[in-house]
Image (cartoon, one colour):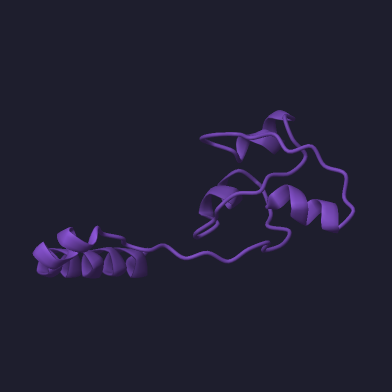
Length: 90
């Protein structure tokens, strides 16, 4: 998807998959830029990086098997609320 996005923009790029602390790519000279999933942007700022553009929007979903959902509905609802509360505090 990302490669197609850059091709449509007629931007010649080499996509190098990085895992873990991808924000180190530009710092170490391994890359000029990175595409990363960003929540708060804190790690980017801590590493002296700036967000150039938002390429895509995404959502996080809690997903369960239908049987597990029926058997554990109360527990899953509690878990969902705990996650939402934790995220809203950060």
